[in-house]
Image (spheres, helix red, strand yellow):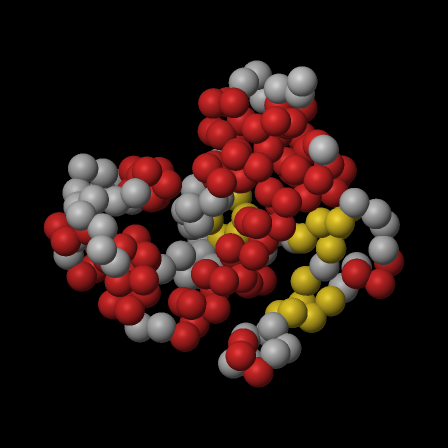
Length: 176
């Protein structure tokens, strides 16, 4: 149970990173912002940590200036700084270096990455250190997965994944 929860949460974040990089590479600023905020009269709870980091809290999607929309929507991840990899719960040496994004639908957005063993995931450490569910959510949100091209930290909260990752791991912190 616990190892599976950690694997699922870890790989959710890895998939979100790759998806975000793909969409940022293939969409205009306005299209990307619309994709994130379409039909929202207010920002979703998972977006609030990023808004706070940017000093934009208390605003609605329609209130942001064009420059603020770009700052909110574009993480501009520097792929050379990515430190978050997918995990698997067994040691498979053939997955130590892989190339992803080779399908024609990926439009040439390939990169080299790797799998690590689940028990080496930062989420395993977070699980062992967390005092309660709220503490675990805070720690997960603060995970730095990469740097932007401007050198700013990119976190699980910036990607909007920390809440879903916490849900996947909630039973692991308070086993029956």
